[in-house]
Length: 360
Image 1 (cartoon, rainbow, N blue to C red):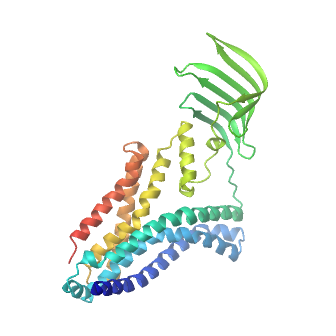
Image 2: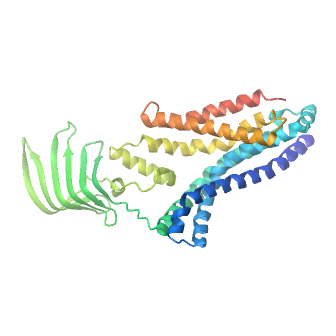
Image 3: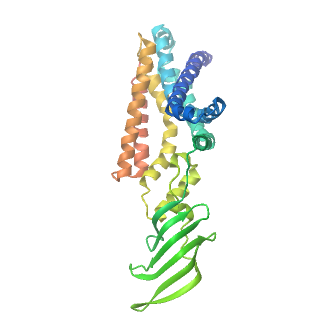
């Protein structure tokens, strides 16, 4: 037991310095890419160096989140490759410790960072990236109105239809409104035409409304200065112009948004797939660590180059696989849950298989 502990500590002492250098390198690359995308606009607007620094400080958590898997992949492959080139792995195997047992602490680090990455994204990354984009819009004088024109939504499983010429997000009102209510057989039983409707907390209320209600085979018309519409409960958020991606919403906000899209009869498969990807992608650090430790011990020459090459290749294949499965889910060829998890499960199996077949 003491021998194994000594070997584990030796591995971690080799692994963490490389990991820290790698994550600093990849974060720097991501920061530079983001800077070059906006540098011309910053110069044209005469944005100060301090404000640019604030923008990139807010982007730092997102950069760390992006750079974590690549850094783990590179660090694992480089550390094991270096130990193999110096014949240190041979000494480890000769002591009766297999590679699978030897890399256990690094895999445990990957598991811990997977959980930490999920919590870090939920509680830090989302708020800071939203603040970054808000600050960028202010500095570059870019408006981001959530109001929308010519909006149509469905509610109550398609029984209620909402149409408005304009939705004002500041006042939470609909202008030029036409509301249609149908029964379970699809027949129109009520039509409300109103100049405006306003949200009163739990439902909409029409102002200056003409109401047509079915009475037998005909419709009776009446006029109302104010007409409460308790059955029309679709929240104002459903009428908003989408101002940010679901990736920038917390899980509770994302779930509420998806439900509002579903209730309004709008496409929601893509958002639902991305919602499940938030959970599946959190396993990425664990997956890349398993793959890196399994293949790292196969390099004896050009270790730095080969480690970087493996990191890039595995990352590209992994993200392309996830992208393809996501597109299949968006298109309806597979369920959102399957689209979000299929690539991750595939690479978990590949990682376990590589560890089982690795040099011992």
